[in-house]
Length: 155
Image (cartoon, rainbow, N blue to C red; front, side):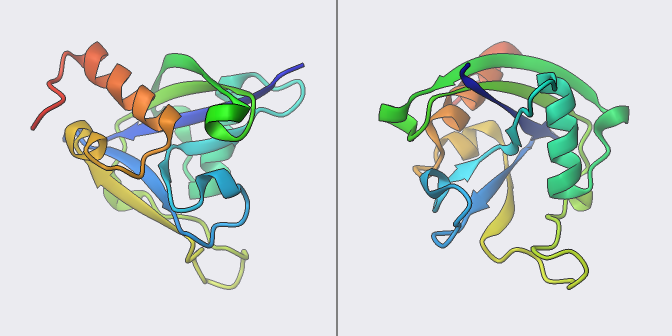
């Protein structure tokens, strides 16, 4: 059975989107090192993608997404040839995010030290699409978000 992931574009009421920049030394997933990607992770056995997304957002950001408007954007296929792994990625848009409250969890809980290999970035979809360091799936999701919202890609 093919592995699945659940990821999110975090959208603010101001029209910006929050993503995560992985540092060059990011060790958990070498394919995302030095890339900008969405928040999220693996769908565990017996878990549905939305439940997995909510769990991942809590683990990564301490974000309780239960009171947020969440819509499914699309399912994208990562391939070993293009992305380093074969995974179906369920992408959601989580609306109503206050960028001031989005803080990455500590690298080692209890130390107070954030993971220096990750940083939250914020921008309009057009600003983010201009970045050359987006993962392929993140770029596709942002393009779909722009199309669905009727937004212009160019600033």
